[in-house]
Every structure is written in C-alpha cells, then in structure tokens.
Image 1: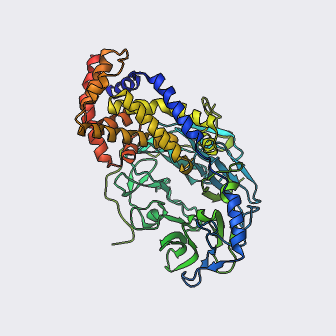
Image 2: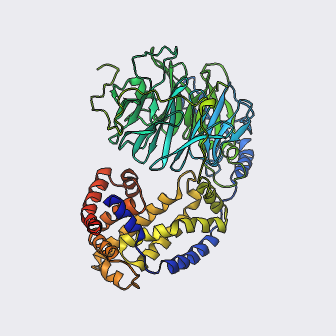
Image 3: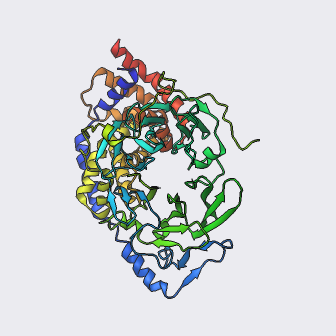
Length: 374
Length: 215
C-alpha cells in the first residue's frame, strides 16, 4: 500500500473524542431546527393562479428584440416573475413536432420521450448520453458508467476512480466510444464497455465533444476515426485521436462544438445535423436570444428572444426545429428554423419530469434528440 | 491566421502503451453484448430523492441525510481544528446552515460536497480566529477526553496540528473526504496550483510518520 493511501486510511481511522455522544447531541438540535422550518409549498398551482389573474390584464410583447425575431410573450410579474412565458402554451407534452426521441435529464433521472409524447424513466441515474444510433444510452451513477437499453435494461457497467461526469457517446456505426470525466481526468471506453483508459489528466470541468463524422459518411480510412476535443486544466482546447492519444489540430468547428468554449464565445450552442448551421444562445441585457448562424456563407438570424435565460439549444434530427428551455417560465419551446411556422410552447416542464413532486424542482436538461435506428 | 487553430502542445499523457489503433469493438450490437450483474447498486436510496423528501418536510429523510454525512463532516472539522468540542459545534452549525438553505439546494448535485464546503470553510475560519486569540489547538485538544489511540495516530494528529489551517483543510479534503485536487480548489475557492502546493507541503510533513511505521 502506498504511503499516501496508508496516510488516508490512518487519518480516517483516527478516533474522535466523544464522537457518538456528539452525534446524538447534534441530531437533537438539528431535528428541532428542522421541525421549526416550513417546507416548500407547491409552486405550479400558484403560478397558474397568478397567470389566470394577471393574464387578462397585462399581456405585453417586448419591443426591444431585433427585427424578425419571435419575442417571448410576457404576462407581467406579480412580484417574482411568476408570469413569464409564451402565451397559449400547451399544458402537457403530447407529441414532438418532428420524428425522433428525446433524452432528458431530470430530478428523478433520465427520461426518454417518444414522438407521441409518452415518456419512460430510465432509472435513478445522474447524467445520460445517446449512443450515436440511438440504440443505447450511457448513464452515470456515482462512480459508475452504465450502458442501458432505452427500455431500461442494463447492458454493462464499469467502475471509475471518482464520480463519473459528462458522458459523451460518439463514433460511427457500430464503432463507437464513450468519453467521460472521472475526478480531474478524461477517460474513454469502447461502446461495448471494453478497453477503458485514461486519455488525459487534469482536464477542465467541462464536457468533451466528439468531432462529428462527415455527413456523407465517407470516412478517410487513414485518418483518425474517433476525434475528441476537450478543455485542459488551463482552459485551452485540445484535440486528440481517442484511440492513440495523438494530438490533432483543433479546428474552428471543434471549438464551436464545445459547450464550454475557451473564451468569449456563446456557451450554449449546437451544430445542425447537416453541419450547415450553428444555433447559439447569447445574452443581451437581461434577455437571451436564440441565434442561427450559417457556417460557410455567413449570416445570422435571431429566431427567438426571451426575458431571462434560455437553455439548450437542441436540434431535431431533421434539422427543422430547435428545442430550448426557458426555466424562468418553466417552459420548453420548439422553435421552427424556417421563417414560417409557429413556436410550440409546453408549460409546467419541471413538474412533468418530476411527477409527484410539489416543491421547487430542478429544470430538466435535454441531453439529445435522436432518430433511433431500431 | 487561418480558420484552423493549430494546437502546438504535446499530446496529453496516456496511461497505456497501446499506440496503434486497436479496434475497440463496436457500439453494442445486442447479440454481442454480455450482461453484467449490477452488484452492489441501489444499496442506498438515491440521495436526490432523500433530499427532495427532506425539502418536503420528511423528518425521516432528514435523519437519513444526517446519519449519512454527519460523522465525516465532524471528523473533517476535528482534524482541521484539533478540538472535539469545536468540531461538534462546527459540524452542527454546518448542518443547521444546510437546513436553512435546503429549499434552494439543487438536488441533482451531491449533498456531501455542499456540506463539506460549509464545514471545512467554517473550520478554517474558526482556526484562524483562534490563532488571532493566541489559543493553541493542541491545548484545546488536551481538554478533550483522550480516546485510545496508537502512537502513529497520536503523532499524525500532532503533526497535522503543526500545519496551518489551510494546509490541514487540503489534507483532510484530499485524504479523509477523498476529493480530487480540482474539487478541492472549487470547495475552497483557491487555484488548483495552490491546492497542489499545499498538499505537497502537508504530505512532506505527514508522510514520514506513516513511512516510519512501515519500515
């Protein structure tokens, strides 16, 4: 046993004077303090009531957004911004506007939402990532990385030295890899759970990204198949061949895929399935705008502007829709990428992905929208 | 400057000698996969669910959280301040602070690091304040009812007490609570390089004690 591990064991074994009695004494005080605390009250009912009261009186469209942008409508606050949101939002997610299935991380664990709006909880896991063909999902649970089927069956599981975070499943066809962080290190494992190994030490706490394969699937057989970009401990982007560890020049496109880019770039962005567009959320004076950029020919268009922060964006598999979250309004917005078309808003998202909860819930995160090959 | 940003740094360190492309097999095609048992999973109720129940007002859930975390928080505080009475106060106050902020807690995050952040920072503040009052951790510790310890443990406590509170905190977070240097940097709000240097200095003092035992 190394001296460091022995030191840890020794320190953890040091007897603390009067530990048992102290634990019981403290418990009595903590319990008493807790008994005096009022638990969180349900919020959604209050919000709906506030909307009903305020909705008829004040319905404003903000006039500060760029021309052509859809503007998030506002039913004015009653003290604490309880009434923000798209008007005419649907009360429940009954269907998706495009083919495919959503993977959603929530308080209770990851959910898979089918096109007809039905959803299934995968289990009590933390984070999740679709496999490239949508046949499996990589999920995390503490120090474990687990591959599960969309039906919830576990296919394999591997342990890690520290808590597993930011799993990202990439690759082509059946030749895939999962990159993930464990502690301060970046690891990679094959899609069947074999050959896990540390790829880099001391990386930044940000998700790695896989270079997207060419859309025509003409892969250079001599080139690297699994190219991964991550931020090192200094916050600089590095790109490697995940199979050999060899450094590869980082392209601008690689940088654009990083959700936590090195500096000065919007932190919420996603490239369209055909690789031609970059959707990004940028903050401008208390509002967030969803902007569509064309990769090669340039040009940008503001698709939506909202008061408060937006989360996402996530592309539909056909590239015709963008899904963004609006936590302050507790809504999801399906926004068409073409100029025609209407925004589809869904209300009470937190509650829908945390059924049974009546407290202050965590806003769900969309981890992917994919057309499964099954 | 072209649109391609070349990274001229050396490749990151690798943990395997395998440098050729070895075809790690595929996204799991169902017939090729082996089902592995999920031994040991779900031994405990998921912590997010426990926190949620505590937020809703369940005293049972609160006790479950308390029993899961109090001893480690108390031990951490003790090893930083070197005084069992003060450690009890610090651990208790940390729990009370956690309860006050429970409604705002993001349940997707683990509870432990949140509590440990409060505890260890309070322990550091306590140690600094006591140093200003020119009290000694060792003299305070001497008033405790001495538990039965072996010589190595006693010596470790003594050497640990000779370090500054910030160094003790880093050692405790790394070797007792088992956080990584990056996580420690986040918990203490200091650069990772500072964590590493404090770890090195602390270990230089503590390691000989353990190594003497092994020799």
